[in-house]
Length: 106
Image (cartoon, rainbow, N blue to C red; front, side):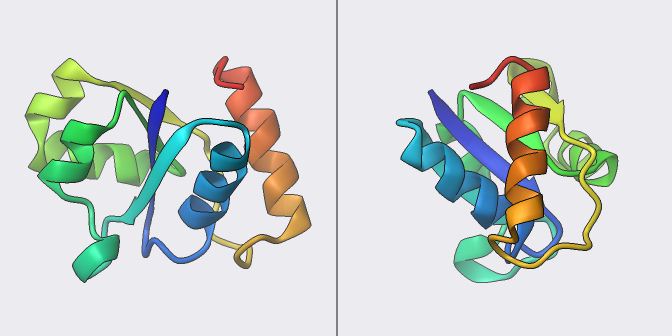
């Protein structure tokens, strides 16, 4: 499964999630709604993904507003993880795994 993880800057939550799920055999990418360059949410990244997983509702709303096609055509899940963790924080990793399990992506 190809999973695109989306957060605000593409620096902490989404790279952590992408690394965790890459280690579990999934193809992953990450992006941020306020990122620039290679870390930005793009049509190419959205096209690539089978599933889009956002960290907060605001990220899902961003995709819905700027890329409405993907809101209709792709599965978009929200993990509800606030922006208060550092990259690869052990607590963040536990929360990501728990929340992903709750939405049935293992």
